[in-house]
Length: 307
Image 1 (cartoon, rainbow, N blue to C red):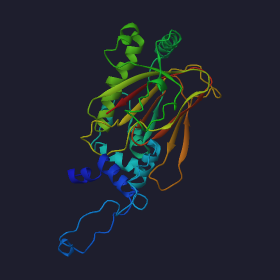
Image 2: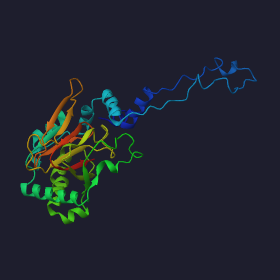
Image 3: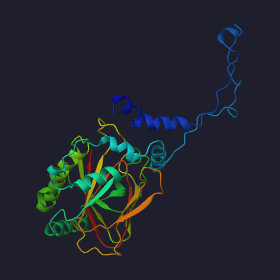
Image 4: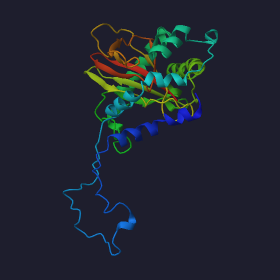
């Protein structure tokens, strides 16, 4: 894809085009004459010629993040857009944790699932540590950290989990070697494999989340806006989640629900993925709407976002 095509479909331009198409600005007053020469020499604008009742000021319509995404998706299927970010020459034999089927699924449907990516002993240790962190009040309620001024589109009460950031260098990794091993797996093996599949810039974020067993959930959302711009460093490109729930069984809740729109030419599908221990779900951040269903047992997950 050449640079001009990428520029034409840039995220900012697409949002501006949508805003222009939906603007409710009223018609301007008719110009008094076909051209400037037809105006009388002493023509002046008189206050009151155009009263406020007839010519209202521009109306600003506020829409939610999901409404904006819906309009963007209607102009271009997000999966088709994101496929432009994939590398053309991929050698699956060099993968450490992915398989060729995972790379193909990520390209063709926008998500893929890997099982048994970490030892059960590591899963149990991180789960115990996360539970102790929550009970000691060292995890923040995620909805309480929402800044409406910085992110006016996101609903502040959309989620019920508690979180901590655990990026490399975090003090929390110094006290939990098992958690550090998990972050290392995300930042090394998985990141390296994904870089071979998708054009990434190297930046990543890591967050550990605890969902209390009180029907806590996360409403439908998307992790970034869709883009095909390989030079963009603002939008997340790939999301990966590993679960730490060794005793999970049907009825415990907390499933990850993916809303699969495909290429937009068929009905949306709802796909529920159980948060099984050592399971990793990988999906395109700007493509897949997803939600966490109400959890009736403790639910712990570690998420990485790659840009």
